[in-house]
Image (cartoon, rainbow, N blue to C red):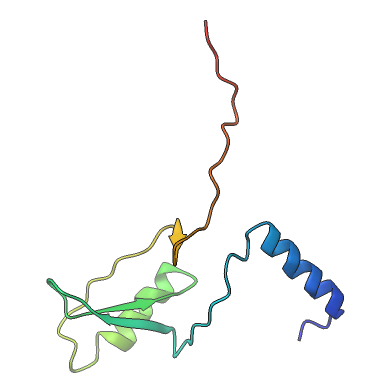
Length: 104
């Protein structure tokens, strides 16, 4: 699919795994960007997780596809800004301080 030698692609994947760019392999089926819906307790009846490249893309999906549904009485949108952990795996390693400590 990439029009590159298989060995080159395999090496790139190995490097990405070693650098933890690829942390885990997981299959997610994307039906029109709708990845998951779960029943929740509290103020809301349902949580829908939507991914988009921009906030505007997500807002458009909510406004044009979800909100117009007859069974949807209202929506509240929250944005995930950064993932620290997914499925129990830490995505970023702790950074070492870039400055040396100073004592007087």
